[in-house]
Amino acid sequence: MSDITRTVIVVGSGPTGLLLAGDLATAGVPVTVVEKRPHRISNLSRAFVLHARTLEQLDARGLAEELEAVGRRLGRFRLYGRLSLDLSTLPSRFNHLLVLPQYEVEKVLERRARQAGAEFRYETEVTGLTQDAQGVTVEVRGPGGGTEVLRAAYVVGADGMRSTVRNAIGLPFPGRSVIRSVMLADVRVTEEPGELLTFDAVGDAFAFLVPFGDGYHRVVCWDRGRALPDDAPVGLDEIRETTRRALGRDFGMHDPRWMSRFHSDERQAPAYRVGRVFLAGDAAHVHTPAGAQGMNTGLQDAANLSWKLAAVVQGHAAEALLDTYQAERHPIGRSVLRSSGGIVRAAMARRPWTIALRTAFAAFLDTVGPARRKALGQVTGIGYRYPAPRGSHRFTGHRVPDVALAGGGRLHEVMRGGRFVLITPEPYKAGADREDRLAVERWAGDRRTTVLVRPDGYAAWAADAADARAIDAAVTAHVG
Image 1: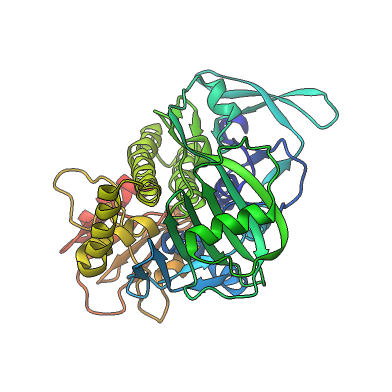
Image 2 (image 1 turned 120 degrees about the vertical axis):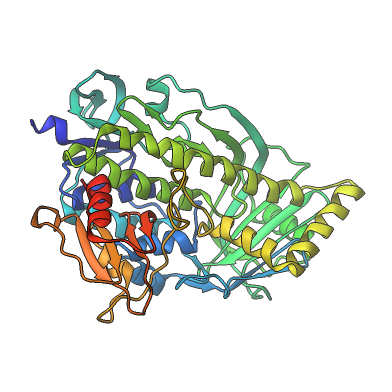
């Protein structure tokens, strides 16, 4: 097998591309990251929240603790003036939101990818892309204006909403702009909000405010009556006034370190794979900032795709495994569009009956535990499951929590390195040819179920009473 048939090109060095590149490089796959921007970590980032499921994925890569040390944990958030959602009941070690700028996430992900051996090519723009049965040819223009041709087995477009990769493979990006002239700023305040994350809407204005923990707060606000273009100047007075109308006060905002204006779209590509080319993150789906799910959804895309690509290019799995990326992630992208859009549409309610409906829905979530848990599961990502074959064990396709293991360890620690983990009630010996891809552990307690955990933390297979032959068959089918 030549080097080309084992390589992957990732286009885009945002959080999605960086996690994907780090996973591939850690698995021993040669990976090149192509990024048209210069090499710098910008503090002008829109994303600012990591949810529980993303923190679990980062924990399985040994990164969560570092990010938790620089971010700020929020145990609850408030919606629509009266609904306060408590995250302490989440069935996760990370029963909170972690607020931190996107550039902090990018820093640790880039460092991990570089240390694992990923190659980075900055100021390099994709100008063309074609594919054949053996691989993908990518034409690029480098920092000096010269052109070059790169070749790889697979390409992943993680290059954002205006994805060059998506356009090159001819995929549409259907959807529409939902709200225009959304204002964004990082400001200092003289009056700390009573709730750590505050989101509300009154009349034609909505706003939310969240602290970074470094003295600055992120404010996102919108005035229905001011549909200005994205490049229109933004003034602090305009942000103060819009926030004051939505939240009742402006909290004494001052000293902005940056301000911006943008429009928010809801769009999703009809396919996340065309041949040997994949889409992930904002290249595949974009939605409103409500619920702060954008960066998180992209990181989950990367976690789902990376181990599958590694298994296929290294010859441990058939190429059909790659089709499950579309089957598993596209429905979740659609669900995120609906949930984030629903939050914004409720906030934008103007007619008395829609406002009454919003109030009734908030009261319903506030008093009905199952509904509240389902809503939190969707927003935080821990409530999603993947499709399972008919007749599978009830655990198959579900996220596996960070369970305790015999000897005092825990699942996320064992998962580091991108391996499958087989958790059994009885000893089981894996073949020597699988040791780099499979860890075998025993439950800390007396649970009798056997579970094979995928590298992305979901159950690939489970059985309540499995003998060695059944385990061998499952390991062969999934690990290779």
